[in-house]
Length: 368
Image (cartoon, rainbow, N blue to C red; front, top):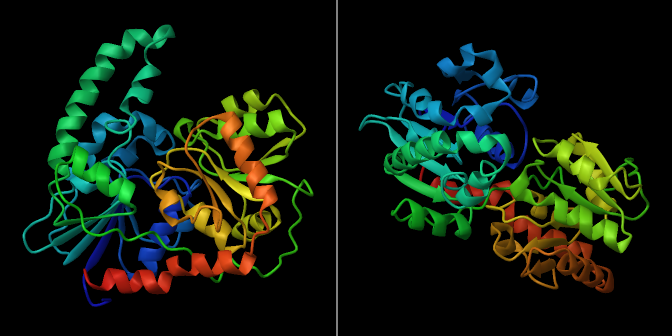
């Protein structure tokens, strides 16, 4: 594997989350592989400081490094500008434009698909609605033009990889629906069993009893549902993560003493918060979501939405609770169920170990 001339490609390198943990896993397989991306912001991506990162020409515009939401119309040009002719294998990890790289016949392109681009396909109506009121309404015609162009390009770009490997059955179904092509069998992203464990830490959380949300703070994650459910039911909630929706969510929480925004945590702090929580709440319609498995490896159950990819790895009533609605009262009932079940932490961890790096490597070998 290591003798191959390999390159990795990712949409943007300016933050840390589940997708970045996938990149770290691939980097462990190919430690010498450079990482090609649209923009690179070292301040938000300290995990990549030892990598060889190759940004596109968009890097010359400093404002774009942290405001990738403005880059949509330029992303096709950025990724088509790269030259991969001297590589044997290119692996793109993408939920946007990285799959649209151009490779020659001698270079194999594997796309590890996080999801078809949300704002173009599965969540297009939600994104468009933000331009349907207030001053943004004047931008709606321009927005529609850009979306039409990007949809056409994205569907063409989706045919460029030699194979597409989805991260969940939810993503596989979206691939077939929006890109009109079959994907390979699912390979779930792996977790690190050595990091997320039952071994106690010295970390102490702000509350003796609480629920946990670990997520980028963006609208489709629906962290607002978890906040409302915990406020209404008198339960404590710790929100771990940052993102564009943070200010709005803090305002929504209204300085409630039961809602705590922890921001970014180290891995050790995160493990401590997992181990001490009553359960993880994951209310959004997610493509997959590694945090559910991370919590499970730490012996804790999760509440997940049935249309999410992470529901595929949860055994209802055994390793977590699967809810059928994105409603506050539904989450409250799920928390009541969490509190009524005597969870077996060792059973939860045993289930999570099916999704660690070693078995995942074996699944990747067939393609490498």
